[in-house]
Image 1: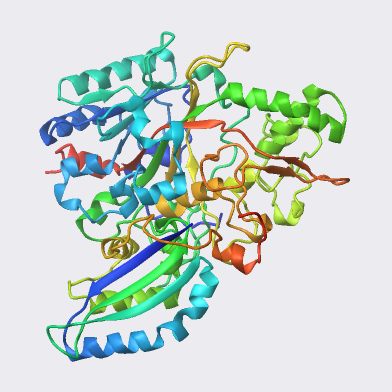
Image 2 (image 1 turned 180 degrees about the horizontal axis):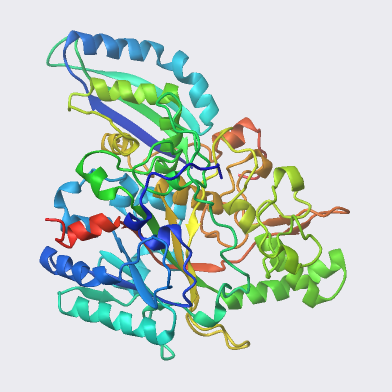
Length: 464
Length: 142
């Protein structure tokens, strides 16, 4: 992060979830299809009083929401915007080019996304509450506003075990995901670049700076756009959301740890319980409590559970602590030398939450996973590039000789990568797992723009 | 497997544009080899001038054909952020028959995608290796 002068954007014009990590314990992420412009306009207008900006609050709102629009949703209000937004936003995550990065195949196939509904997602409303009651009342308000304005709600999950079919946060897990890891530890700093861009050298900001996430400001490596014309004014101060619902197969994960533990015990000794935790840490690069392996290689340590001040190439160049293909080392390789040399490492703002109740082994039935909210200024250059690295680790010479291993946790094993996983050991041969299972299934993906507050007022018909 | 990119850009018929197209073809390989080497994902790139059969001696269109590793859009910023490569595409846009003014990166990305005649998967390749693997002389079973 670079040291910052006062940012040129107005926080009150930016939707809150972009710049702030909400700590509201309850949330619901509602998907909608518009029928017509009039209904969509009235729907957004009905929700506007509850939309939270990034302006500082003196009292934390008991309930609030943010709104995202897919490109089809944008076209409902602005049909003339075709070919004026980034290609991947317009084409959608199911497009052939996006799928070159996402590799959603087999049970993750886009044909079965959103519970195989054929309806297009136009709008996602992210509703937050301090209490279950506060959340429930605002969800009801949103639902009623939809009902009176010919806006159809999509239930993306099969309703089961008393669940609604909506994407509701499973609050008791708080900051943990279903595989048992602490989540949301490392997000970009969102400072403002101290050195403004000049035309001859436009790449002046740190990848974690806010101008790489908000549309319409100079100096970004990743070029959030559009920057010009009416579409540029519409998008300015907005941010893209790669909204990705990921089922987490805890049964497969636990089974893999149990099956592989004897091999690990043979290499490091100790009990199988310890071996399972050790292996789980190697898969992600952090112990389940959050401690990074680079800082705490031998055991989890409460003192390091939120630490982010470490590097890979400098501190663990041979991957003796954190394997090269560990999830956190792939999704943020930090100081690793990139291919091509000098390419900056993209960052994402992660605002995801878990959904579904945890399993009670040996009963693993039930739907559960992550409501992934990956915010970026450029869906292709940030989100899709990182996802392509997850599926094939070809972004750094450190991953030679094959350049085709995969992220140990998140990769789609249907991609053309090497499913094996190698754990380097300080003494003796490395532990080599020949084929990692599929731990994740994509339930759906939508690319949204989280428009500015002004743009929301505009599409609600309140600026004339 | 690699992916194809086939940019087909009909160009203006005035002499200045025609001369610029000839010059661009002549210097394409020597000028842009360093940038493409640095990018490290392009297998081949060709710059071809399509003759205008209706007007002998004139060039109808420019065609840039490449095959490269991985998806297109995530790596277009690398092209845009490279001054030499950005110059190539800015030059192409200026020559285009359709009045094209690229004022920001989104315009550049859309220009590439709208003029690309190839679809993913429409490429024969005799080998499966990436440029990075070939240059590193990777050996593993076919």
